[in-house]
Length: 316
Image 1: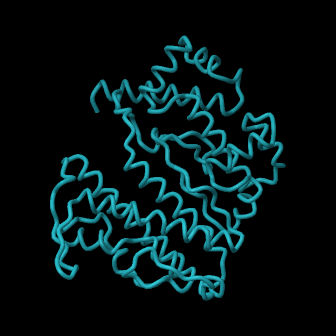
Image 2: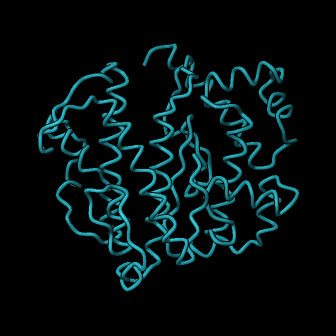
Image 3: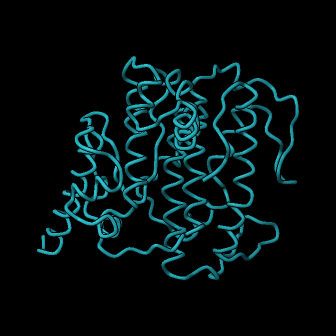
């Protein structure tokens, strides 16, 4: 490891230790207190922290408090009021709004789901999270490069948001019985004229996971999947859907990133499955998947809502 990397790693580790002391309640709290703990002015601390860690310190601190609160809701019998106060919130209402924005469910609903549903995945630009097992802060990304592109990547944000929502929905679908998943839908409609309407909630969830168009394209270009085993799964249990979603998202998001890196948005591809054959660009395929895929997810979300499973608003 070179000296620069070691220096960056040491600096990042010290900044994370400042956060840990804040999280443990040692000393004063707030931006000024964190800057003082790091022996920096508040302005300089904000700049250095964002450069080294990858997010503003206030956002990281707020997320870590909520992640720890989620751990306490799952693993302890603390009153929600106590959890809210320990997370730095002066009112239950403020805590409830912040918690639901991050986890898609209220603190009370989260606690009810805890015994039956795995923790919902969270994404963070810095890769810094609260490790509930060790009860400490960890960086899943390692050393963050000192220079980073702060331009918003809207396509990637759409993909990540869509994936997180689908993960949340499938985790909640674990609570449903086979009878609920396979009950005939009272109203059936398809978003595409050439596709048969789904007859059950299970079919609706299954259809939102993968896109045959994308899979055909990946086969044509001989895409090397990190783990192609999900392609062989034909069952439609919720657990199998979760596995397929993870594999598909890895492949599709990887393809999108490669298209972006290569600038190959206008590269043409002949879809021989169409009758007659049609030519599309990579950009058109990605646009089409987002255009039709997100409404399909929202349709499944509405069906879950009718069964009392509220996933939250479909916002990134």
